[in-house]
Picture 1 (cartoon, rainbow, N blue to C red):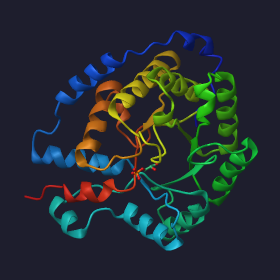
Picture 2 (picture 1 turned 90 degrees about the vertical axis):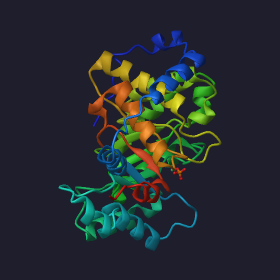
Picture 3 (picture 1 turned 135 degrees about the vertical axis):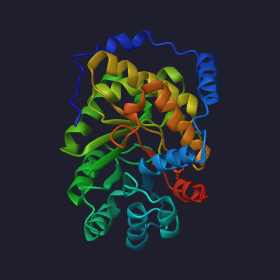
Picture 4 (picture 1 turned 60 degrees about the vertical axis):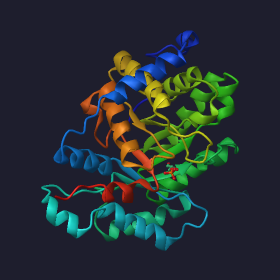
Length: 305
Ligand SMILES: O=C[C@H](O)COP(=O)(O)O
């Protein structure tokens, strides 16, 4: 669990952040020119890596206990036996977590307990007035406690974007710090809602403030905004994570989420993180992909010879 580090970093220093959009776009083009897929074995290794970092998500108004049970079964056994037999894998492949609404956490907890996989599959819950964050602070914090008490081990909170858009950095820091406290031992992922933050500078600053206030992960989006996880935005967040690591020695995770649907999308994100943060970030402890419809596509793209 990451502790708040406001004493290490000075919030005032964020005033001089200027991120140049055309530089970001050029750098993304260079990164994506590096195609890591060089053979069938290597292609499958990237696909399996992508599966292992998925937070398998259902965040729909019609979510029920039974579809959460099905989601958990899929997270536990994402590959059909026909593929398992052909690949002869040494290690079991599972997704890193499932991600649900607070009221469905109990169902996920019971499903995962039934399979005896509590230590292998994390249970993430969205909270704090997902997706807008525009609810009273008291109820937002109560949602965190409710989800933790129901069995969530990871909490994906949303920021109140208005605090970013009006430059209320201290208020933002205080809110995230209190959310961190409410999580107790659960990991805190802070969803920035990047598509509604107005500029790359704001995305960078909100990333820094969230990390200073104790986020274990910074996450791009709820999946409900018009603009969700894009690679240029991912690059800006990686740069903030790298800067934070250089200044504190603490590694914070990245979770792109929202609109990641294809094998190419997933591999591009892995390449971005590998290039910008290094191979040590390509583990479920430091990298997740939040997605509701990516898994089937990845499984279909495993090449069997
Ligand atoms: O947190 C995860 C996102 O809500 C998933 O978005 P998606 O449904 O576009 O994959």
